[in-house]
Length: 332
Image 1 (cartoon, helix red, strand yellow):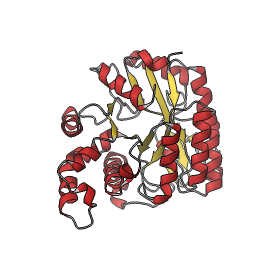
Image 2 (spheres, helix red, strand yellow):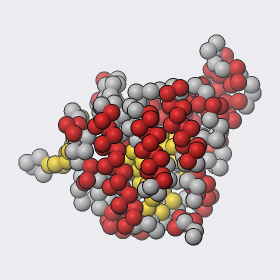
Image 3 (spheres, one colour):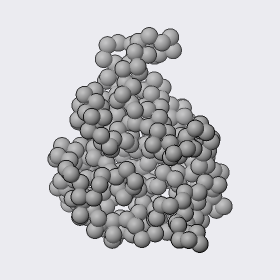
C-alpha cells in the first residue's frame, strides 16, 4: 500500500508537538504548563520558564486544530517532532528515558488518529547512547516512526565515537536523523549570557548552534565514517551558507584539517551530503545556501505555529521538488 504522503504536494518536515501526556514525565524537571493570575501562559522545563507562549488550545497541543490550520496553509502532510524545549539531553538518564518513552507513545497516538496527514520523529535520551539506540529501534519498528530528532548540544559531541552507535542504528534501520537546537541553558551548560537578552538564544543562538553542528559533522569525520547516514538540519543550517567560504578555506589552510578535506571540492561534496530544511525567513538567504548545495537535499519546513512560521495564507507554497526530496529523505 502506498504511503499517505506518496502523492502529497506539500510536506512540512519541521513541526513540533507539545503533548499533555508528557507533563511531569521527567520528574522534577517537568515539563509543566500553567498560567499566571493575569492569564499569561507559561511553560517550565527544569529551572527554565517560557512566558507568553500559548500551547493549550493551539495547534501544538490540539491535533484537530493542527489539521485545520494545515488545510488553511495548503500543507498536505506534516512530520511531527519533539518540542526543542524538552530534548532533556542533560538531565539524569532515568528521567530522560522515562520522558522519551512517554513522549513517543503519546505522539504515536496522535499520528494514529490522523494517519493520512501526520507522521512522527522520535525523542531520544542522548545521555545514554545504548538506551537512545534501543528507543530509536522501538519507535521505528513498533510505533512506525520515520526517524528521530536530537539536539545540536548533548553530553557527547556530534563527532564523538560514542555517537557512532546511534548513527549506525539509523543506517541499519534506514531512517534519517534530524538535528535541531534548543535554547542554551535549559538543562545543560548555560551558554553565553549575551544570548539571554532580546530572545537572542533563539534568534541568533539557534543559527550558531546549527553551523557548529555542520562544522562538527564535516570536520569531525562523521559523514566519512557513515557515508549512508542521512542527517537533516533545521533552519537551513543556520548561518552555514553565509560562512561556508570560511569553512572551506579552513579545510585547506588550517593544520588540524583532515587531509581528506584539503582537495578542491571536498568541502562542497561533504556539505552537499547533508540535508537542510528551507526555513530561513528570507529568500536571499535560501538562495545563498542553494547556490552551494543545489536543491536536491532541500526540504520544506515551517516551524508550524511558531513565532517564525510563514504568515497565515502563505504568499507562495514550495514546488513539487521539495515534496519529492522529503519522500526520498523519509523513505516514503
